[in-house]
Length: 110
Image 1 (spheres, one colour):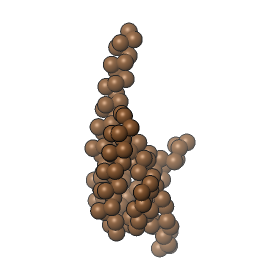
Image 2: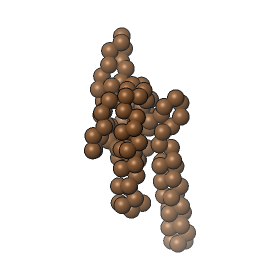
Image 3: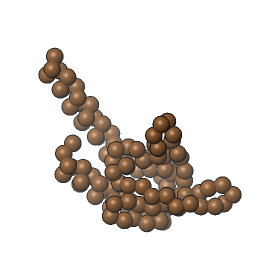
Image 4: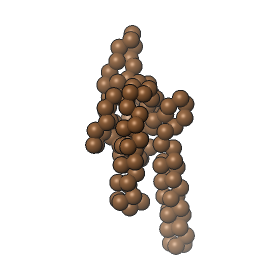
């Protein structure tokens, strides 16, 4: 995928999240080395490069976590609301295009 398309998708993610400020979302973040963190909280702020959520912790406490839009684009961070993924179309479209490109490249080599 070219950079212009990636930038357009990141802008679209930013705009969508800007409309969801103040709403409860579920976050699933892949932190690497088979460590996946799932939490639920309120989207509090949207900035040009990242967004901030206030997530629920034990005993009624909350913590702030920040995530980058690029992580949503790559699928490292998944957001859902009411059990439905918010950005599934971006991720599925990208993976289909990448798989198609890889398959065609391998056919040309053979």
